[in-house]
Image 1: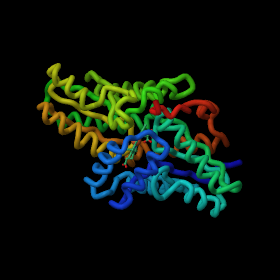
Image 2: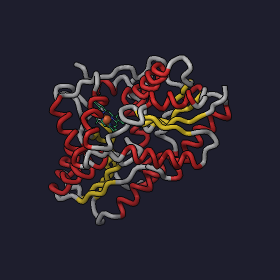
Image 3: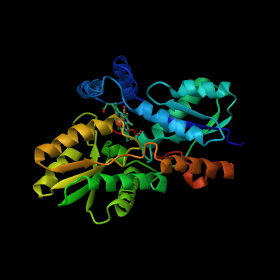
Image 4: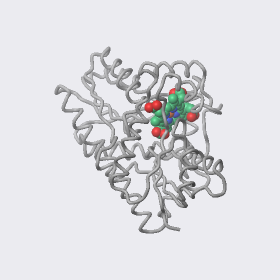
Length: 326
Ligand SMILES: CC1=C(CCC(=O)O)c2cc3nc(cc4[nH]c(cc5[nH]c(cc1n2)c(C)c5CCC(=O)O)c(CCC(=O)O)c4C)C(CCC(=O)O)=C3C
Ligand SMILES: [Fe+2]
C-alpha cells in the first residue's frame, strides 16, 4: 500500500494559563511524579504566561514540511491539542490509508520512542477499524540534518564567549536509570545514541574542545535513581576545576521548548553566573532547512521503497520498561 500522508507527532504544550494543569495531568497520568514536582513545573509554565513555545514551533515545522511536500501533512500531539486521536480521525475522514509519522524526538527509549508508538496505537484504536495505518520513521540522532544544525549552533555559541578555558557540555532529558537500562533491543540505547550524537556534533562544531554529556530536567520521586550528573551539579564540578566558560548544547531536543528555555536559559545560566563562569547556550535545529530536508529524505526513502527499511522497524519488545516505579 503506497504512503499517502505524513503525520508530525510531538509532545504538545499548554498555550493558556488554564491549560497548564490539565496538560500536566495528561503528561503524568499513570506515571510516578510527586505533586511537589508538578507544582514546581506548573510554575515554570506560568512564568511564561502559561504558554509553552512547543506548539508554535510545531506549527512552523509543519509549514516548512508542507511547503515542499506532495502529500498532505498532519500534526497531532501526545499531551495537548491538537491531540493525536483528533488528528487521526481527521486523517480517516480525509481518506488517508497509510501514513508515515515523524516524531520530534531523535532517540530510542520508552519516553522518547516507545511511548509515542503506544500513543499512536491508542489514537488509532480510538478512531476504530478504518483508522489509517501509521508507521514511525526512524531515529535520526546521527543524521547530518540533525547533527549539522547542532554543530553550527555550538560554533555560534562559542563565538560569543571570551577566549579562555572553555568546555562543551551536551545535555539531554534525564530518565530513570531503569528506563535507560531497557532502552532499545539490548538496553542502554538512549545513552549510546546520545554519546554518538555528542561525538558527531563536537567533531564538527568544536573539535578542539573537551566535552561531556550530562542530564537535565530530572523528575520523579527523589528515591528513584535517574541519570546523573545533573547539568547544574556538573557546572559546579567544572568551576571547581577552574573551567572559565561553558557552551551548553541541548542535543536531546529538536527545538527550544520549555525545558530548554527554563531549565537551561534560566536555571543553568543562573548557576553559571553564580559560579562566575561564562555561559552560552547553543540553539536547536527548529526549522533549519537541513533539518526540514532530513524529514523529507526520511519520507522519500520509505516512499521509494514502498516500505519502512527493515533496519528501522522497532523490535516488538524493545524500550518497554517505563521505569521509575520502584
Ligand atoms: C526523554 C524525554 C524527553 C525527550 C524526548 C521528547 O521530546 O519526547 C522529554 C521531552 C519533553 N518533556 C516535556 C515536558 C514534561 N516532561 C515531564 C516528565 C517527564 N519527561 C520524561 C522524559 C522526557 N521528556 C520523563 C521520564 C518524565 C517523568 C514522567 C514520565 O515518566 O513520563 C513533565 C511532567 C513534569 C515533570 O516531572 O517534569 C513535563 C511537563 C516536553 C514539553 C516541553 C514544553 O512544554 O515546551 C518535552 C518536549
Ligand atoms: Fe519530559
